[in-house]
Image 1: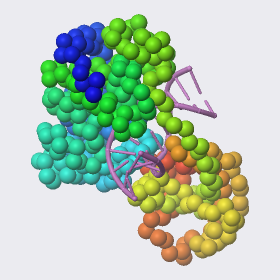
Image 2: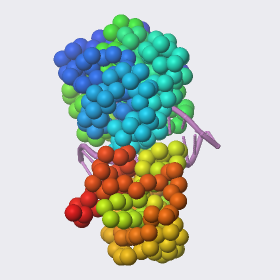
Image 3: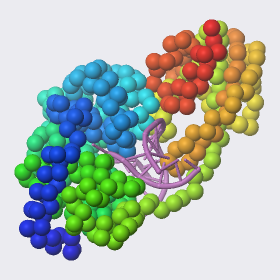
Image 4: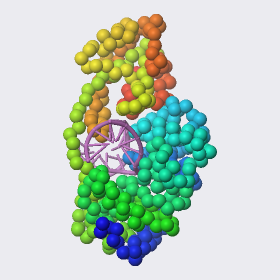
Amino acid sequence: MDQLAVPAADVAQARTDILAWFDRHGRHDLPWQHPATPYRVWVSEVMLQQTQVATVVPYFLRFLARFPDPVALADAPQEEVLALWAGLGYYARARNLHRAAQEIRDRHGGELPADLAALEALPGIGRSTAGAIHSLGQGRRAAILDGNVKRVLARWHAVEGWPGRSAVARHLWALSERYTPAQRCADYNQAMMDLGATVCTRRAPRCPQCPLQARCRARASGQPESWPSPKPKRDRPLRQTRMLILQQGNQVLLQKRPPTGIWGGLWSLPEADMDKTPERHAEAIGLKVDTTAHWPRLRHAFTHFELDIHPVHLKVSGAGQQVMESDTLWESIHETGTRAVAAPVARLLQQLREHTP
DNA sequence: AAGTCGGGGAG
DNA sequence: CTCCCAGACTT
């Protein structure tokens, strides 16, 4: 492995340059840095998985105000955890965070374990997140490999191939481990993330401001944007669904989604097949339809498919005798704003509130 | 190794 | 519109 043959003197000089850059130009005022407790670093790292810093900040502040420590989080109902997560996406992160907090409460005395392997054994904490907690939150030496570090290392050493491929990932992990220092590891890791976020950006990298410019092979090629290799493209299928906005008086019918799958554990509107009329669907669950209105189509994009949501607003009556499943409820339209719902459902409920006196 | 899982920022 | 972001988990 030629990347591991980097001479010790070069490794040492690179670390020095990166840390000097960090002292002058790194980010030192992110909310989870003050104080950088293991718990706060953990929550921030999980929120930051596949999510940009600017998006996370308000969620982080709300979350920490409500759940200031692992035990507070562990003792809360999952419903409340999901409600504070609603809108962030990847809701398995919230469910795993909650489960991990309960393990921390029950098996680790309410504090995050100081052992790297024990961290990684907790649900929702993989190798990189464990390394981040261990270094940034616990002051120990551990390598990380997030999107920023991948990009910096891939350019620095002109690593070919999409980082999602395991061979490429192994290569990048080896590089990360090679450069990660024992001294000032937290600053070094933060520096690498800051470099990727503010200098070695995906497009239009600011190479003249980079402490690695003289040793960067991508820079030397004249096309630094060519690294890392992009993810292989796949066509995204377009799916159709119908969402029923069943209104009775000032109430609307909500349905809790299964614990796994899309929007797992969140509240939603009942979905109906496109090949059956919405009136028929409403009548099938014992509701009498008074009026029907088709709302404009909502297109929602996921990573691997697109979803066309066809909302139908039905004013109904006769729900009093209907036996309700435990996963459905009638909610006052004006109180739907506080439930954990997916983004497009939140949009529909907001429209409903605006059209309801 | 490939697929699943959200939502939004930025060009 | 496209790409991808402080990734982890399942199969």
